[in-house]
Length: 137
Image (cartoon, rainbow, N blue to C red; front, side, top):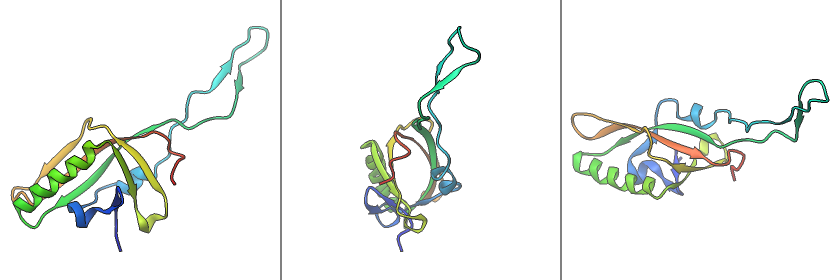
């Protein structure tokens, strides 16, 4: 069974990409809340909180691994994966973890890339924003 789906494609078959360290923990982590709306009326004691709390966007860094059969295959897969990320909109599914689809925006900020000396394997840390963590359809 497919381990990881990115933009509707099997990530390993297409780009040699798998989930890296802490991937599921980050993906399934709690999301931040927006600031509460308050009314600090001088004529009343304390502060009144108005409205229902709402979820804010969240910034995450997902760790991936990438592998190729040889250096040429790795380079081809790496360039293709970079183009997918540069498209900006990234949807991620982990079939073994449920039906949720994570709708992310690739930011390209503070990303990491560590490749082995044989140039066939790398660890990637890619930064994303999830604009609406409650939208998992």
